[in-house]
Image 1 (tube, rainbow, N blue to C red):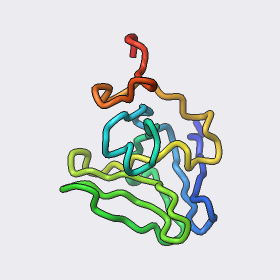
Image 2 (cartoon, rainbow, N blue to C red):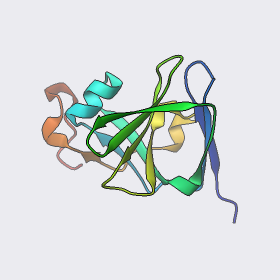
Image 3 (cartoon, helix red, strand yellow):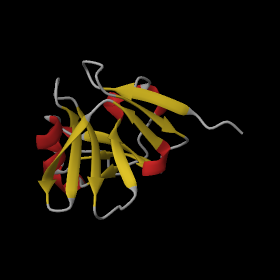
Image 4 (spheres, rainbow, N blue to C red):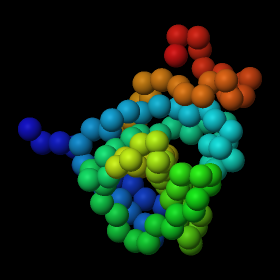
Length: 125
């Protein structure tokens, strides 16, 4: 059976990536760190094992908190990825960086206590 290969990249096109196979999860994150890192009310992440991802271009990384690295394009500033010591061997990709955003419907929400009042998910999530 063929696994899907989905592509994406940064705003200027300098960085491109491929994700082979299905993500481990897709979820909206409402934490304060994601608010700051993406300048958004929440961020939608798709989690992949590192061996599912291939990169073209020089993704830069910075340590946003102990044990956490966030990847971005150094030219246009597009945020792309998250790697945390809590999830070794896994990279979480921002769904907005993929070419086909519709392929990643979120299955739930995390850190809902940090959600903004106007972006709070329904109780069923």
